[in-house]
Image 1 (tube, rainbow, N blue to C red):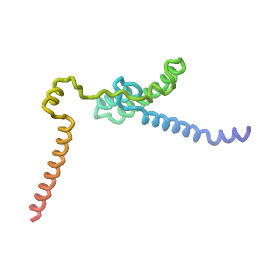
Image 2: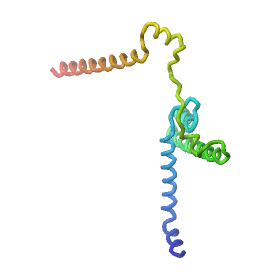
Image 3: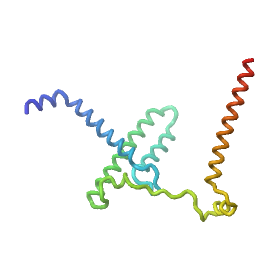
Image 4: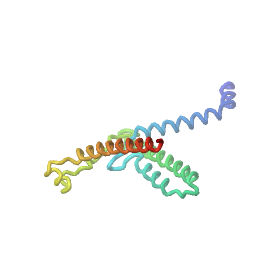
Length: 159
């Protein structure tokens, strides 16, 4: 017992810091594993959206202190989501403590086939997805063409 107390007296600060780092790392892993998109905006999604809005509204003069304040508030919000999961599990409202933040996300298809814009494309035999791929391909070709023109201009300036 005396050795344990001597050990704690000597290493209490290191153990405290290690515990804080472990909890922070586990919180980071939970947030990393949770879905980022969901139509119902469950889990950590509302906290993250609020963080993004708060960081964008920070004034330029105090952007660092404002940012740190909002990041700490976001961490508190994330901890509340985890606590709510444990509370719901304890009360029998969900199967597991992590069901409210680790789940299969519901993502709606962004293209509604009943939409008249999409129906017009479909009637003409055109696919918006294929059009987008073609636009990206043409944009890449244009970027390559512009790069070769810039190289030619540099070569002319050197002469």
